[in-house]
Length: 218
Image (tube, rainbow, N blue to C red; front, side, top):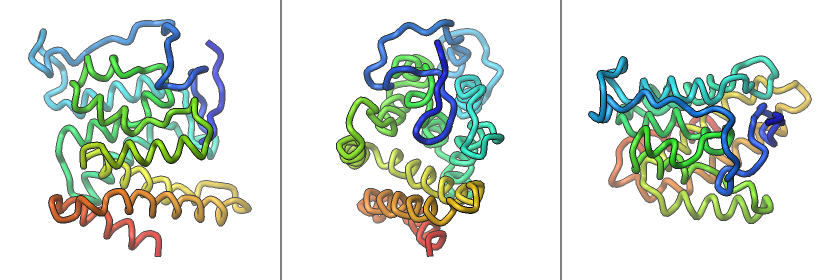
């Protein structure tokens, strides 16, 4: 399957939008998580997030960030670190969602791949974080926000971390594009904050995340 460069500047191997993808993968994806879920032999990973990191690394292999040099996998790792180190949330499911959040949208992974390895909750979270690229951009973004608004609070926390990292990553853009890209990244941060505001009272991690993001965009 020929590769392409997505609108966000990463190299992908997908030729159809993730939500509507029906084409068969060239190679089956090995499942190393059965023991993690208690369904098979002993797993080499004591934590599910470790398996998620290994799975995401394989799926994002050969993809790079917009600087043309940094492996794309670094982004999802930084998002997971933002969740745990900046936002203070170490929930296993949230870390898995963070590590896997771009696998359906930007690789040959589909919902069933995630569900079979990590369970329904995590699969639903990753699906909620996946844009429907079959829609026109304006409609796509509106549908995406509406879906995240209806999702579990953990999805909105991951989205806050995603926008946090993307704003930090603006500095890797060419100097003539930094100002424009920063403006766009800040707009997306504000969208994520608006979506997550309803979670503040019930989830202290969300309150801390919004405060951290608000400080970053000042």
